[in-house]
Amino acid sequence: MDTVLLLTHSDGAGQAPAAALEALGAARRLSPAPVAAVFGASTGPAAAALGSAGAARVLVAEDPALDVARYATDAAAAAALVKASGAAIVVAPATSRMMRIAAGVAARLGGRIDTHVTAVDSEGGPAVTRWFYRQRIEARLRRSERPWFVLVDPGALPSAAPAGAPAPVERVPVVLPAPRTSVAGERSPASGEQTIRPDARLLFVAGAGWTKKQADRQAHADLAEALVRGFLAVSGASLGSSKSLVDQSGEGQKVFAFMSHLNQVGQTGATPRHPKGLATCCHGEEPHVVGWRFIRERRAVNLDPACGWARGKADVLYVADAFAVMEKVNALLAKA
Ligand SMILES: Cc1cc2nc3c(=O)[nH]c(=O)nc-3n(C[C@H](O)[C@H](O)[C@H](O)COP(=O)(O)OP(=O)(O)OC[C@H]3O[C@@H](n4cnc5c(N)ncnc54)[C@H](O)[C@@H]3O)c2cc1C
Image (tube, rainbow, N blue to C red; front, side, top):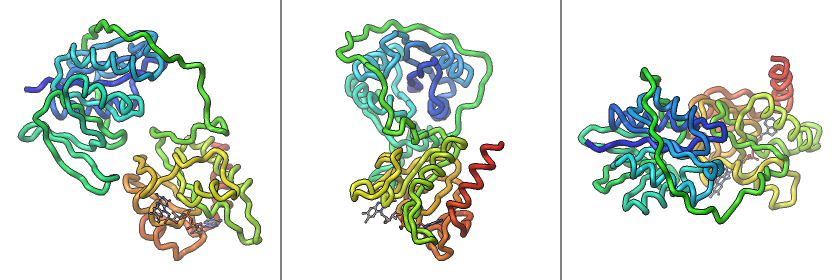
């Protein structure tokens, strides 16, 4: 039977990303006792979490240089862990840090890689289900090449459940290349806020209606910005946007300073996975049909009762003024 490895990095506090436990759940579908491996500056909490969630043993690679995401050092640590495990199948969470190195590590080890994997199973041998062509085509496939790297999309699978006593932890010595880059500091988006939060329970989608003229024939973009930012602050939601709203910056119109094209959801944007979604002032087909594809419970606020996409794609449509609704919601959340 193929040795299956769950490979992840830790964060600054030594913890595994939430998606690593989901990827471990996937690894457990391929093997009842997968090996887990973590690299980072510290790995204690991550090793404990993975070792209590069904991993047979946990390999760790620790080095101060692994405190920050850097291709050369991350790839060297990941390759050393895969070699030490002797794994034929490497399952990893598709975090941005992992996505950056996984293809390179697979190439170094003479393996193959599949990304955007949303399911794995072992009926008749290991197989994965993944998406192609911007999530329009779903395929189930197997590979004979080893090691086979499988990157599991966050939010697609349930986390591995706790499974008894913690597994033993083994340190793997790694020789990291001398870093040629150093991290001088972090610079956040203009507003100083991170509005894309993949682990949030709610995706809040803002549409171009927020900047349109309202009943008093005036636009209230500053108030709109304050309401949306206020909601993100009290709810912890992730911010999505329609293309029309983010495109306004190119046309010199008032645009939310904390928003960029990275927030766009839809056909030419992202299709994030969150348990719930709330769309406001948004009419477009692309955000509702494609951008919300993987959102499980969907609600929308729109002034227009005939908004076909909000009606057709939301579970609940509130026909209401989003300015009034969000003001009230923010006040209630602030009180709570
Ligand atoms: C090739 C192609 C690719 C595209 N890809 C994408 C994509 O990836 N993502 C995307 O989003 N779009 C995409 N689009 C654009 C898309 O077709 C729509 O034009 C766009 O999504 C519309 O954005 P909107 O709903 O924010 O704006 P509008 O269509 O202008 O809708 C604004 C809505 O706000 C409502 N509203 C106004 N004031 C209020 C209020 N006070 N309270 C409540 N509701 C209010 C209005 O009733 C209206 O329904 C693409 C288009 C093309 C041609």
